[in-house]
Image (cartoon, rainbow, N blue to C red):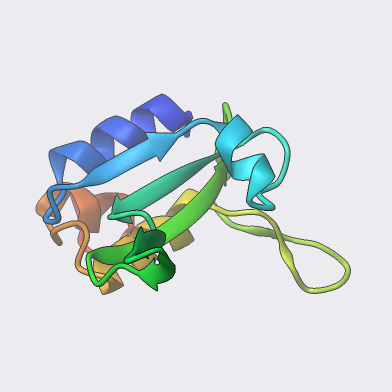
Length: 115
C-alpha cells in the first residue's frame, strides 16, 4: 500500500481529529529510519511548559512508516527491531489506541470481516 493511500484510508476513518503525516527529515533527527515518515496522533509528544520539557496529555502516539510503499506485514531485523512497519500492524495499533474507528472499510481491509 502506498503511503498516500494509507493517509486517505486513515483520514476517512479517523476518530481522533488530529492525525498528521510528517516528512522524514523531522523524523531522522528524532531517530526514525531513512525513507520514512511519521504519523503523529494528537499533540507532539514533548513540549515545553514553564521552560521545562513536558509530556503532553493530548499525545496519543507516533508511528514511523516507510515511504513510498508500506508492506502488509512488518519486516523485522536480525536484532528483533522493526525495520519496516507494516500497514496491517499499524492499523491494528491505531484501532487499539482509538485513533481510528472500526468501520466496515477498516475491518474488511484487516480481514476481520468478510466483504
